[in-house]
Amino acid sequence: AKHFGLKIAPADLERRALEWSITRGSRSGRVAWQFIEDLDAEQRLKRVLRNDPGMGVIRHADAGYEIAIITAKENNLDIGSRLSS
Image (cartoon, rainbow, N blue to C red):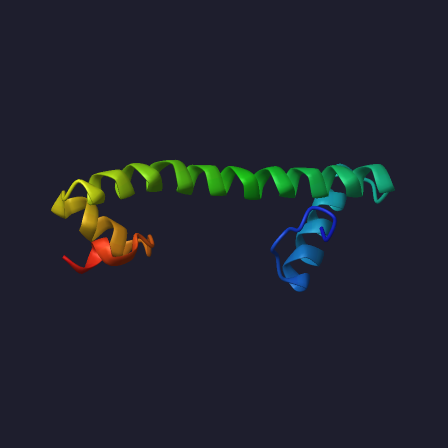
């Protein structure tokens, strides 16, 4: 997990790793590596699914759309001083 810079609490990492190994019937290094690669992909996907729509909200907030400004505030999107309007 450290190799990929994954952000996960040690207890959660251990719990998920044990679940992964049990459901796959193995505790080999290959299975451990597959678990870490899967966890990395999961975290990357979450970032993409947040960041891409977030950029659309930011563009619309920049254009002055009130609903986009509200949405940005509700979702903690940092668009600086533009949120002060």
